[in-house]
Length: 394
Ligand SMILES: [Zn+2]
Image 1 (cartoon, rainbow, N blue to C red):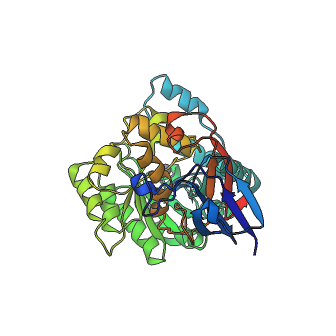
Image 2: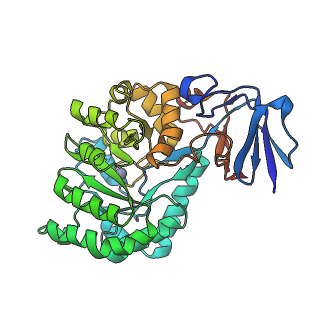
Image 3: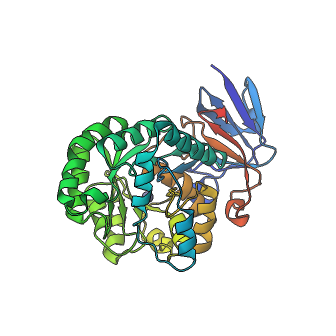
């Protein structure tokens, strides 16, 4: 059993009851002991137990590692030209997904694997210790299965998104494609996936198709997540609530009924459906941001994630999303940091990550800053000094 003492912590964000800063549960003057990859003890530095090794935080802030609960990393090619065209005034329609599908199908396994690992490592350097990874650029039985197989090599949080768009070869017969997704594609994907997701949006999958696909996934034991209400109002959010989704993602265009439905999932005893906001997508498509304030004020649990993908949000940076959430979505720095850590954990229905308490995984980041406030206060600055994952310095 090896132990590591993280000492001289200026500010420890625990996301646990007690401490300062409301839900952040900030503690000062404490040390944190890691044993066998988990947090074994937190207490005043002067009472710290002996340990095999010591990590001196030199007065910096220590936070739970970021939990990025929404990313699309299995793809080939990029769409920089499409981004440039958009910045020159072209609207975003989601149609570019098919461009990436073509490139992904043509790529070898090693090329896809290299991209997934490159982006995963890039995120880790920016403090992300858990990253959900979706399929969705293969859209054949074999390509979806291999996408998830490759994703599962680097993450246990893998999501089958065969219902990302209807591929071109099924454009005239979407019912047949839904049958393929629910039948052989799901059978091939499920062994490598924890979750199922659908892009429920005009131009992608309507509510009946989305409900059918998600129900098939639930029937084989997958948890539900939904891409909903990104490009316009629609039934996706309420469908997610109806099915007990862990998270509905985007939530850019919401009615009062959508907000009420999300808020109603907080009742004790049942699971919460989290609203996961993806401000990188609005940034990269130059679209209005979701109204985080309205959700928070209604009591909805909010998470932040990157939506890392080559079309609409090619960032792997959770600190960037925190800064956007504060500046553009009227979240306080504390709310944004909570949403990027504990919120992401709730969106993945995990209680061993996104917090630093005894028993939690020792996934943590040491900032090059004295306070979590600096993540939004100093946007674009590389503030992640050290990252521990399962107690191991990365
Ligand atoms: Zn997405």
